[in-house]
Image 1: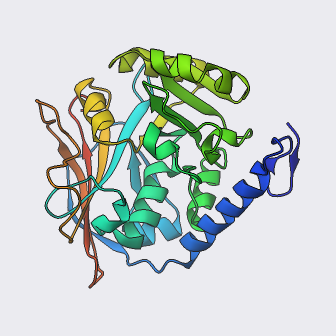
Image 2: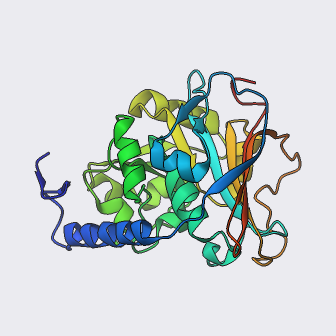
Length: 304
């Protein structure tokens, strides 16, 4: 498909999507590049992670205090990494995640940075995907450069999970950028509700998922779309379902120094809390808004 300027799609529809995507991207990059970050420092390391791939460049290793580990890719499905920020009292819920206190270092180095810089796709739930300018990518220039050095496309494929089809396909940026593929893991209700909207956008692919049949759906994503690594930023319900299905390989968990968030909203809400093993624990050097970052692997993942 031909492109115009800065890699934006040529044949977007007449609703101004090209300009909207350009404006949103430039705004996100300006914000990320202007952020003043406090480096993390390593507090503790775990046992060697067999099969992991370490990535980084001079800038990322300076602020992360070393290389970042990507999980081994399992046979038959993509690796799936969960990304969460929680308050000091363990809450992850609330209308505005930034109020949990992660600050710029979590947002730009971890959440929009190292946790997705090596991912083929970012997976979100329906609520996150339906924000007006929702679009999940890497924005800090040094991390954009790192992603390019890994041979990956400028933007990850966008994966959206929806059982019911409560999606703003017409109004959300994420669904209207033809140069960036979208995969919808869709339940029966979603497939029926959004069939016409999906069919009119050739860059959107639908992978059926009924109930919690994650293994089959992810196998399709790997086989049909060549997705090897997924960064999952879905909500607690999706996270719990993924963990219970034993398809989560690692968790990027930021704990802030602030209390708050919606009470009693841990990232896992099921009956069998996962056993997690430490990869690395890091802490910020900031005097204000200190954070603790933990990279954890699950014993059900490969390389254990």
